[in-house]
Image (tube, rainbow, N blue to C red; front, side):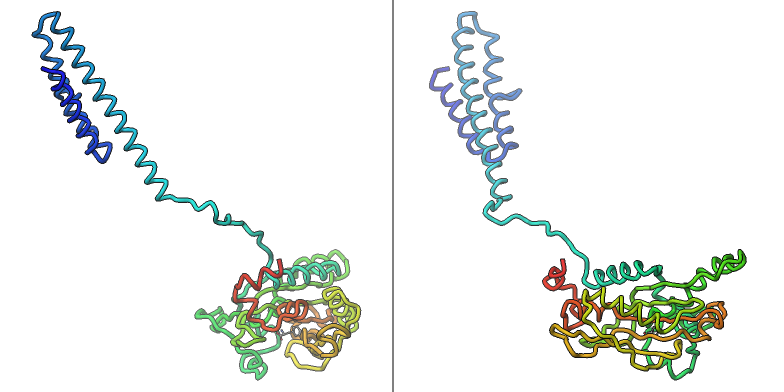
Length: 353
Ligand code: PHE
């Protein structure tokens, strides 16, 4: 075999390697030359029959060809690996000039901020904070509040009903106000009151607020089918309308951070209070100055309601109120459409962060 013949084997190995487009194809091509029965391997096997002298020269030539093929193989392997990396980098291209993805700090919803504020202010006046069910029985939502079935006052609220009847056969409702919490809270604590009385202690006062979600069939710029209320209840032996006025005035002035604020009690009607009043506030300065704004319903708790609490209306006298935290939030921040609170638009919400 001549040098040229060795060269042509090396040459055809190079060609075969160059044609291999993938690592697998390259390994196949390699087998044809330096594999178990590859051309070089076969030549090596042929050496056995030769003389020592011939083995030397021919062996050296074969080795040279083998080394050249292996070098070509290594080179092609590297080239394929480089190409693969290149393709991968292209596919996963990173545009380093793009701005990074910032994790923005979250914040509380404006109505949640108001709820927290309300709870803090009333807690500082010795009020407990209670929570209750949003799917409520007819008895708690209406009847216990001196508003029996077929009473005309029931039509004051367009209530959502649930496809499930209570023990009384009347469907549950999505509570249209937080007032059911008045009787619920009293019942939850009635044992504690009875025990105190048994020990000869004076009957503990009920002083509680109950904030939460409420529901009515109502929807426009100032009404949402889901909205918020906060109930207040203060019952004791000697709690009067005067106390309501003091507590609510204090609350409003603290909430709006303004002593420049007037309150007005306007006669109204609720089945569960007698007498009843709407509470209006008036700012003396600022963009809303001079207008009377309704913020709550209120009144002296009706004896029937006190009786339904399991208490004696001769001994437990006091007031209740129900205010609208959504409205308070609108007034505090100057928001003019209630629906903005429930749309979830981040551009609106991030202003309160
Ligand atoms: N529950 C009444 C309403 O939703 C408000 C209210 C609460 C009035 C407590 C008086 C006493 O309109």
